Amino acid sequence: MAVKLPIYLDNHATTPCDPRVVQAMLPYFTEVFGNAASRNHAFGWQAEEGVENARAAIAKLIGATPKEIIFTSGATESNNLAIKGVAEMYREKGNHIITEATEHKAVLDTCKRLEKYGYEVTYLPVQKDGRIDLDDLRKAITPKTILISIMYANNEIGVIQPVSEIGAIAREKGVFFHTDGVQAAGKIPVDVQKDNIDMISLTAHKMYGPKGVGALYVRRRNPRVQLSAILDGGGHERGMRSGTLNVTGIVGFGKASEICMNEMPVESARLMKLRDRLKDNILSQLDEVYINGSMTHRLPHNMNMSFAFVEGESMLMGINDIAVSSGSACTSATLEPSYVLKALGVGEDLAHTSIRFGIGRFNTEEEIDYVTGRVVETVVRLRELSPLYEMAKEGMDLSKMQWNTH
Ligand SMILES: *Cc1c(COP(=O)(O)O)cnc(C)c1O
Image 1 (tube, rainbow, N blue to C red):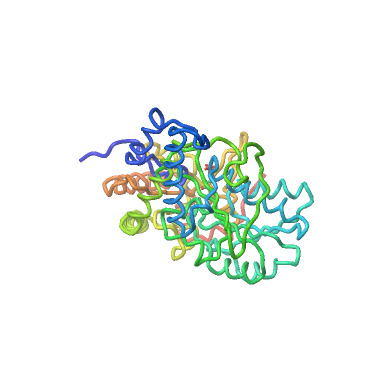
Image 2 (image 1 turned 90 degrees about the vertical axis):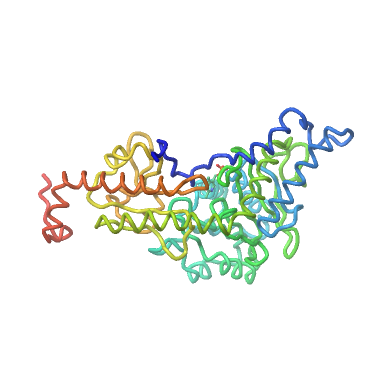
């Protein structure tokens, strides 16, 4: 059976809505259209019921209680609210925040802005496998530290941080622990109690829900976290996030959470099998391929590989019937290597030839085999054009070569 092209393998960027999610949302556009904050009629009550059911489903997915879930417009806003909210609320206690070099821009740029306002930020480096060193974390904590923000799993390399250990350290030192849980929630088990997580950012569109709706879990006891709001207004969401709730989106988010919760064991095993099939079949047919990030502490549906001796853009052109992300980011006119791969110590050339494969719920084995075939044939073809690859194969150590550069 022929596969349908193009093939979508970019599920860390976004995921399609599950049809069951769409079905759950539909009545909320036209029939149950009330404002969840309308307290004096049935339209409002029904909308509120939809919201509260969703809140409970999302709370259950991460081991929280419904009251601890604050709805937002997505994880960018959740990250902003967690970090800026703690920074403003606990300014008297201290002005120091600890985060990590490979965070999403929604965390890094939020921290950069706070630096302009007199906060101090430590950006922990990562080891070669993409994980932070817990000793670095311990050493970075000072009496002025008010927040540790370390992501659960990385969106490029799928590497899972030692969240449990970080939570234990944060708790012992009396510092709040926020984690960007976007890539982990719904994919692997997440438990805010077990791991001492005080805040976790989530978004629906990375777990087969709609775009533009997210949540922030904010711990209510042991310890109670208080946040200064970013948006002022009607005092929705316990005063932490004013604005009429996106009822339709929230209902979809709830349904998406329920499906992930129920299907996670089977789904993650299936996706890991597909991921390993892709990896093993590429590695058995090509040499000079390098895996970026830890294989043991990794999301089951992620693969990130560099293909030496091919040119990044030609590589992407060669597989343009497959939607993946590359290790280059287009900033203005130039291609910049990914800062995440850079933080791992991946050289610029290899970073440019790296590809992120994000496998998702709707991918099939036929698709994975098609992708493998396309990647292998493209790399082989491009390497036939590469004099460097030929020299390396003849046994020359290219790192010791003298290049004539005028
Ligand atoms: C996608 C993503 C975000 C941003 O989420 P939005 O809901 O699109 O704002 C934040 N963090 C990580 C790790 C992501 O992958």
